Amino acid sequence: MTQPDLSLKLPKAWSEFLGNPEVEAWWSRLEERYLAETKTQKICPTSASVFRALELTPPSGVRVVILGQDPYHGPGQAHGLAFSVPQGVSPPPSLANIQKELRSSFPNESHRLPPTDLSQWAKQGVLLLNTVLSVREGAAFSHKAIGWELLTERILERLGHKDLGIVFLLWGNPARSKKHRVSHPSHLILEAPHPSPLSAYRGFLGCEHFKKTNDHISAMGGVAIDWFAGIGLV
Image (tube, rainbow, N blue to C red):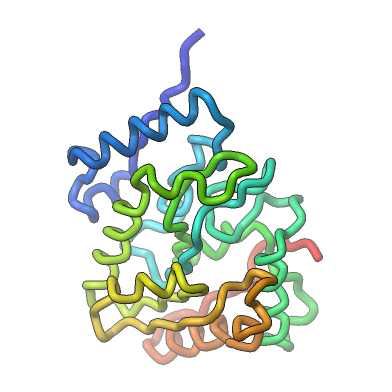
C-alpha cells in the first residue's frame, strides 16, 4: 500500500512570496520534527489541512489577517483555519464569543447566523493564521517549539512591509506581541484581549473590530467583508 506524502509543501504562490523557504535549513528541521510527530501522535489538523489557510487566501488576496495561537486540539475541531471548525461541529468557547461580538456589532444582520466554518471569510481575503500550524490532539500548544513560528513570522513580515492596506486583528498578548512585524503605515492594527472566556469580557466583547475592519476597507474603496457568509451553529 502506498504511503501518503506527509512532506510539508507550501502553496506555490506563498512559496514564491516568501522567497522559497523550503530550501532553507530551518524548513528541513521543521519538516523532520513534524513528520516524527505524525508517526507517534495524532496531529491536528490532518496533514492535508495544515496549509489550508494559505490555500484559501493567496498572498495577492489578503485583506485582513486574524492571528490565532495554535489549532484546536479537540477531536474533529481543527481544519487549518484559525478559530474555525468544520461545518456541523459546535463552536468552541472562543468562536462562540466571536459570534457574540458579530451579533452585537451588526444588529441589522440578526436574521443571519454567524458562521462556525470560516472558510467563506478566507475566500474573501481574511487570512486565518495561527502562529503554530499543528498540535497534538489533546495537548494545547504542544508544537510550539518545532519551528512553525519561523514561517508565520515571515508571513507577517512580508505582508507587513508592503503597501497593501491590510487590517491586522491581534487578539491576546501572544498575537499582540507580533505587531512590530507590521511596519508599513498603510496597514491598520487593531488590538484586543483574546476571545477566550478567560479574557473576552475584559475588552474583546465590544471591541467592534469587525465593524472597524469594514469601515477601513470601505474607506479605501474596497468591498466590505461579509462576516455572516457561511452557515453557523448556535
